[in-house]
Amino acid sequence: MDQLSNSNSLNNDDKLWATFCHLSALIGFVVPFGNVIGPLVIWLVKRNESVFIDACGKEAVNFNISLSIWALICIPLCFILIGFLLLAILLVVWIVCAIIASIKANNGEYYRYPLTIRFIN
Image 1 (tube, helix red, strand yellow):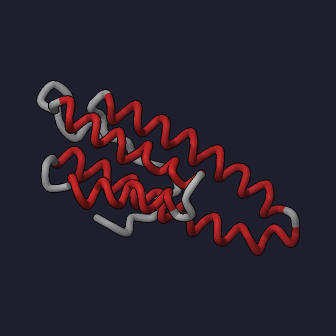
Image 2 (cartoon, one colour):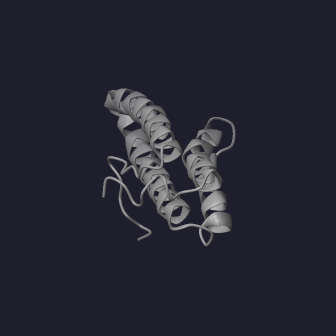
């Protein structure tokens, strides 16, 4: 699914809210579990307005829940030091993927995050 719909048929509001779905995950730097709460709130409020926003919101929520799970798995691994490296890698993946996804959404393209468990279909 490279592109959910033709980017010409999407209005700017759809693209903007889809972009916010992806970027709102960065609230997690300030608010605990903000990486899940931000995209979840935007998705729940805007999902009925556009198929594109609905798809981007689901993808952002799924990715951030998955990333939280992967981070929780890494925490006990910090006792054997490998967890610190894995957490650093997850942090980089999180930031890079959120930026890529937001750019794609702003262009009207659908983005599938790596390492994602699909909780919401």
